[in-house]
Length: 81
Image (cartoon, rainbow, N blue to C red; front, top):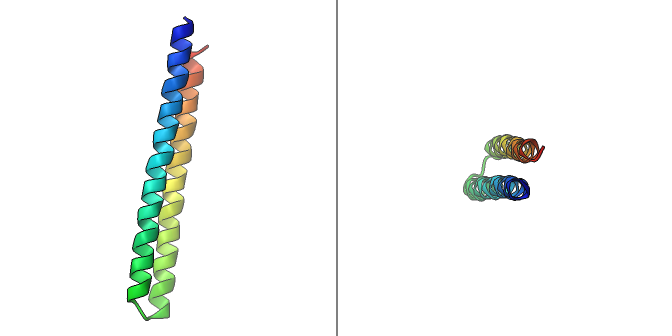
């Protein structure tokens, strides 16, 4: 039984780590695209729109990441009980 608890904890940890890595890649991609788009435009209205859209996208990715971490931890804790 102790092997199952260890495997469940390891699986939850790997799942949480993958969620964080994927969120970091996604937010980094959004940031790079925002910087590229902002440097190519001269219109201040477009710059504000690019920034606000990028921030909303980053917030959505962050929310999904937090949800995935919570689910991974719940799965790990429910198997160990």
